[in-house]
Length: 148
Image (cartoon, rainbow, N blue to C red; front, top):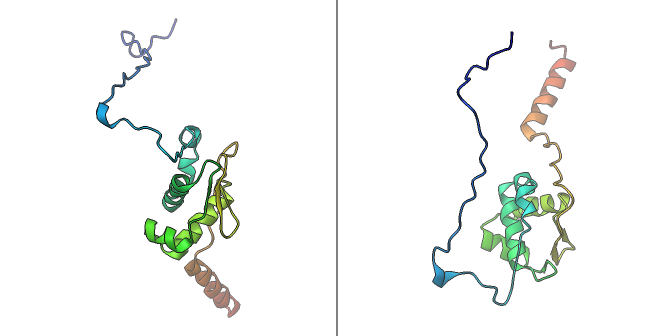
């Protein structure tokens, strides 16, 4: 005997809906004047955006905005921190994260936004927090003194 689907009258049809776009404000259409920045669409579709932390995204987009056609820029860290409202530690963490993820190069003065790698580079495992390390040391000392 053949098995009857639970909803025999319901047929699921996958429909691809194409949204028709229209210009909302014809007097304000963007044009390329002077400098030009771009973000490849695969930055979003292939998971690069999702692989970044909030401060890394902020710094990366800033570096794209200020870079020349080769991806080069030379803003000083204090100017970047001031404009992006980042602490020096947050800036360094975001910058180093972008370097590890192979999205930028930095020689101490000049930044280069790099062509996207073939796939996003995952984060390294999180470092142990100082409180976790303290707990491990205390537990080890307690056990060394005969604690159970």
